[in-house]
Amino acid sequence: MKAMIFAAGKGTRLRPFTDAHPKALALVNGVSLLERNIRYLQSYGIQDFVINVHHFGEQIIDFLKINKNFGAKIEISIEKDLLETGGGLVFARQFLDHEEDFLIINADILTDLNLNNLVRYHKQKQDYATLAVSDRLSSRKLLFNDEMILRGWLNVETGEQRLAEHNKGFRALAFSGVHCVHPEIFKKIKRTGKFSIMEEYLDLMLTEHIHGYYHEAHLIDVGKPEAIEMAEKHFK
Image: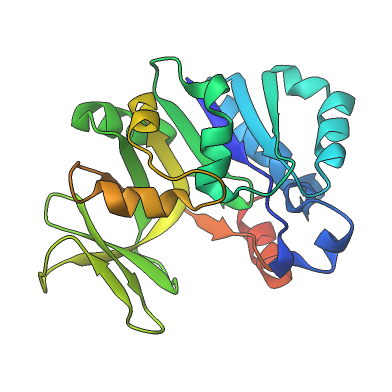
């Protein structure tokens, strides 16, 4: 299986580090987020990667060269303009649209989620995308029915919602930044340019099944400097 690592973002929440570096090279116990995620994916047998770059992208490219791509096959999707997750995925389509499921992970997510279980669940459901979700604090939640099918989105702070149907019994869970995707999704995506893949998922929920995979694994969004200290307690 192939994996895409989203590493193009500006990482503004990680300033001042990201004023001169890409967020993917932020260190947790002396090891960069990018290296940790490559080795995490390799521990499940994945050796074929796509990494998108934009903000200080040349530093990521140099880092991979110095480390000889960690023994993996790595293709770089260079974004001249920042395209966000959805635009970045579409821009990298040439590397991913090969009739095989692939994984996506955000570079600033650290987790010990069992990927074998996620992939197995995704293949059982045979849908366009399966999103790893958990019951953790987040300002935005995805809403699922009893069958763990995506039915909505909620902004916890403002109360704003996007719903496929009205139901008071939805389960509100936080997206983990890890998803398993079937390349047929490229034929369904309507947007172009810069956009969030979550916007497409929320559109697709109206006509297709997008499943959530619930897990209780450790997961830390290393988006802020204070999150690095927390990550260093769980990821040695």
